Length: 269
Image (cartoon, rainbow, N blue to C red; front, side, top):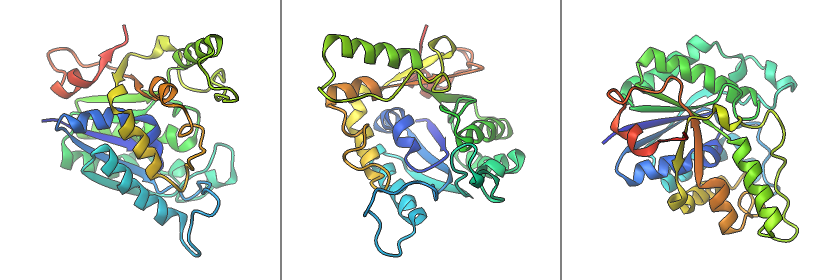
């Protein structure tokens, strides 16, 4: 059996981005490990969800373990940096935030875990972090360097297929399949995801959308039942969240590709 380490910026990022891939891997008997750069201290909690005096960072840490159980992950680790907040906010300058971390030093922290696990695959984000969040961009930088330090065979960069989402939502709207009054987010923002031409692989995880939704629900401090993702009708959720997209560059040669990679990842072209 193989091992996949999935590196993320904040608690709940694993649920939205790679939970289908990870649940599929775990169901097939592979080892799944989650690593978080921060504990999401600057998230906006759902009103009333925290107990008096409860720290958001502690709640979100606990939610990571509940999410891991839903996915089937066997290990959860935190690198110990603090949440940087959205790009351009004063919190980007905090000395201990992930955005301010020295890439080489942070990569060595991650490499300790990679050396222990000897994974076949490391998941990170694309070079814009999916949508430009500084911590997500730093996951890309740190993850790529750590993979070099630990000689990870394959690094896959999770991304959002902007063209696919736009086509799908417009098609559903034109055919009347979107529920009355349900408004999808604006997928036309040019910094959101990547154009399909830049994406190399996909993972079909429609059969694991229940685990993906359970992983999201585990992050109750951030996602109320009314959150737009959790409020999606089942068919729309399966369409929008059941296929996960990746950039694999460089792609491994067929002779050198780990079995886990061949099993999970399908070339887009």
